[in-house]
Image 1 (cartoon, one colour):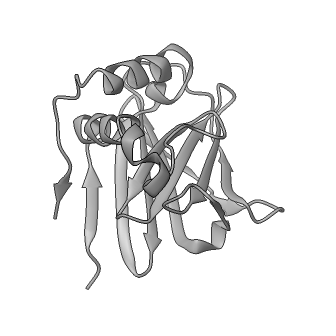
Image 2: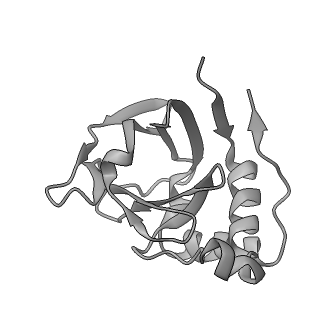
Length: 161
């Protein structure tokens, strides 16, 4: 049976805070700086994933190991993304890019506050699910998330089911 890992927005903020405050463990564990302009999160102790959402609506998912060495996109499967806005969900068709380095999909541009990005994937037989405000992945929202995380104003924790 798959273990389901689910993070709500406060949980993502907490996880980012842990990632961004891990400077002392950088040699043993790798940095948590985004390499592609997104937000870096962790799944387990040995998978980092970076979620990128561009103002044009492009969604990308990059993977790296514990030391932040790039991993091929095929390390995870069943990548699913939905963008929820105005009470409706848009399913984003995610596919491995031509280079094999990341997953990608296209959605309508995200401009509305309250829009939520839902992401799920399977890694080593276990499912991961995360959701957060889509606007936190772009521009000022992304900068605020990084700033809040670095200052410990996370206010939440991950939930396991």
